[in-house]
Amino acid sequence: MTLAKKLFVKTYGCQMNVYDSARMADVLTPLGYAPADGPEDADMVILNTCHIREKAAEKVFSELGRLKRLQAAKAAQGSRMILAVAGCVAQAEGEEILRRAPFVDIVLGPQTYHRLPEMVAQAARAGGAVLDTEFPPEPKFDFLPDARAEGSSAFLSVQEGCDKFCTFCVVPYTRGAEYSRPAAAVLAEATRLAEQGVCELTLLGQNVNGWHGGEGWGLGRLIRAIARIDGIERIRYTTSHPRDMQDDLIAAHAELPELMPFLHLPVQSGSDRILSAMNRGHDREAYIRLAQRLKAAQPDLALSSDFIVGFPGETDADFADSLALVREVGFVQTYSFKYSPRPGTPAAAMERQVPEPVKEARLAELQTLLLEQTNVFNRSCIGREMRVLLDRTGRHAGQVLGRSPYMQPVHVKAAAHLIGQVVPIRITALHPNSLEGVPV
Ligand code: 5AD
Ligand code: SF4
Image (cartoon, rainbow, N blue to C red):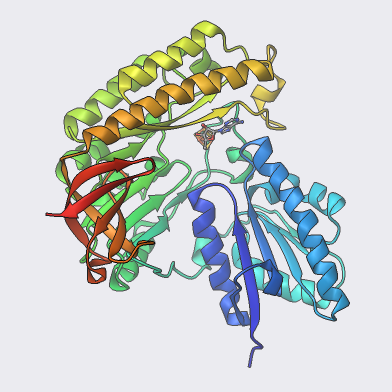
């Protein structure tokens, strides 16, 4: 018999980390670990970390400082708290973590989660830390249990890693080479999720549209197969690279009502010079043409993007090209970031780093424009009828919350028995962070 123990996982960064955190909790269930409400009542804490920008990485060290005190307080009461650092900071700075935070018991990279039970056993037995940041030959997916449903919407990892080597990005170093899960494994996991009541699947990958499953199998075909699974009503995929947007995937947007008309397709910059220095592998014109083809396939399609401001060498004219591209493509939502030099990446060593105040000013200007465009789009939704996946009760009595096809939060006065269903809703009003609607 296993003794009941409590596990708390804190997740930073992207949706892939959210998926991975759930899988880590799953592999520890057979060891007797049940979810804890917070680190205070946990016997084991895992920080699943993000290394994409400096700020994200620094957060980990400050959180470790807090956990150290908690761990010491527990030890004074005669109980032990195992502390693990997982994810991309662990991969990139494993040794550094153990040097700066020697009280950490386990450091593990994103490719070794399936070995976590062994590491816990080892940490429980011995003093000294366990470090595993290998890229093992066996894919972790072969050893991890499938995702379990926790509602009507679920993430499903289909691809991991990146071979694109954008000059600013740490992902190819922390997540390793591009890997696609076999179609059969993905379809089996999707079917099991649907059987548990999931009707919306978000396929995840660092280069999700680079997914390939052998001869003739690209992401478009995989999505068609998922759309045929009973109960699956909505499909999304993220994050895509413009270079991997195959014809068949674009065609799927035209054909499949299940494929949501909202696509996150990061462009990073609107300047050809900067796109080239970033090693993005396409120019501004190619991106615009791609956006046009997508909108021709699915006229309701809305695009979202990521932008980096202050990449080394970015001039006022380059930045103006980014602003112009935002207007030209008409992004309805965008995430924008100040360039953050990441150790070991080519851009960190480039000359003409942009001063911090310039980055700040450009970020503010870009964000103002993006917010304007998001607001225009949200206002254009008033009066429209949309199919909304209602997935939670709201804070007020008789209120239910859901997501529009464009990921906008929508609140609706409706009966709770509609939760878990995709319901036609007429949008009636716009609030600062959400839409309001009524069932049609
Ligand atoms: N600095 C700033 N932003 C970055 N991103 C990736 N690396 C960096 C960096 N070094 C952004 C990109 C990417 C998103 C996930 O994070 O815009 O699309
Ligand atoms: Fe990073 Fe570029 Fe790969 Fe995206 S495509 S993960 S930005 S290297």
